[in-house]
Length: 270
Image (tube, rainbow, N blue to C red; front, side, top):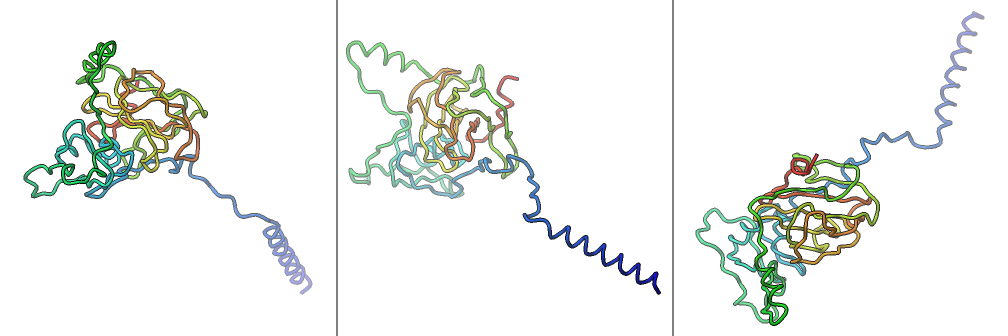
């Protein structure tokens, strides 16, 4: 009987020790993180996934096509918009053609009042120049997009913290870490077709057209130092790295082929 009481005493003592140990934890249980970059900076495409889009201030045909993940030429054709691809706030843009569509839509410019005249263009017409400016404009007119990109270069130096993913909810480019103010450079020769922050999730964004098929995008910049319609060379600085539209300083870089995101690592030098 005495031995049984001894065992019971030891059992209660052991239980009391366990209870006191558990109650000594003052904070919550540790949280196990799945990764530093588990989706906070992943940009999901398309941003615009409806059949129609209403043009907002500072939009261009390129930025709308980029948001929808479509080729700007296709959208221009669907809506009957010809060069210089003039669009205006309030204009209704069809992004996906109807199955029974037999002909292109005609632009609505002529049915609008002067308040709705085109105020935003993608390829602005060159004004007639006189005197010493003639040679410069003549040189600009000779500038054209190549059929192929001869060489791609890295847009920034830094560690890749998020790679391209083919998953529907995956990253549509490369995220490259860096410090605020680091140079962001054009990945190939081309023409700046968009600068601004109207695209949700991209912060201060630069889009460069390199050919009739290829575009590149540079997101989350601190400051942009190029202007729309400006021609740039590969390696030329176009912006300073920042954290606009994201929670950390980095460059989000994309390459688009006919409107579709492709893996930049397939193009950039090893």
